[in-house]
Length: 320
Image 1 (cartoon, helix red, strand yellow):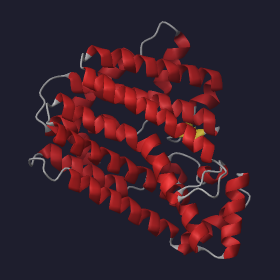
Image 2 (tube, one colour; image 1 turned 135 degrees about the vertical axis):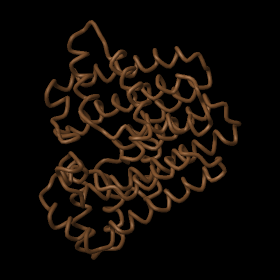
Image 3 (cartoon, one colour; image 1 turned 180 degrees about the vertical axis):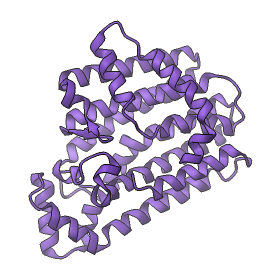
Image 4 (spheres, one colour; image 1 turned 180 degrees about the horizontal axis):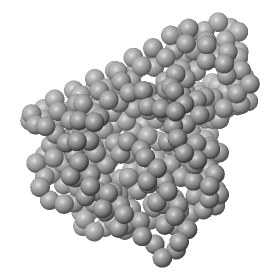
């Protein structure tokens, strides 16, 4: 990831300049909350994906900086709303915005970031880009609702869970990758291939997040270990344990999902570790990563393509 960041350093400085300029609001609280969440760290994977995709198609303009900022604003808006829905208290190692500023401010500033993102995308003056981003934000919202509907549901099928991931997380990766191809003037087949890369990359990324929720280091991943279980989210490691664990383990996991909380977290954590659930989830992430890499095999060799492949490697092998 450090190699990718170094390669994109100049472009990322331009993206940051756009972000700072576009965060400005005459309403003080809007600026305070926006700057807090935007400046609280994060990997900036989605903006990087816009930049790498555009570069892979030899784009030489400046629209990639604006679109990378748009994608980051949309992502940040979803984080603000997510933390309210999930009642989260910690993100990226810092208190969440809703903890500091309250739920109402977080929701409304999230709305501001969504609307600012749409103001920005209009300036690119490309109807195809408007279509991609408006569709993506709509599907992400559907994914949020699907996740809410499936909270505390221990009977969810693995395919249904993957659908939530693809809507809620992978869709913005897909859109970011597609945007770069569009402004780079790619043929539709190449654009679709780039979008497939983004979707499978995003799915792999979320599956590793699922792994880290039961194996990561609190300080490194920047959130409380076991948050998914406490919120009653039936993620893939839990679904695997219910299918392949002992009847007692399956009953314990079902109870934890349906009731939420951390009462049996340590016991479940040990069972997940011994059952092979994390290895299974990593294998699924690796499979998604392989599909992502295959999708862009037809791209001409370049440092941009090499960085796209490195990004996949980072997504599945990271520990934060």
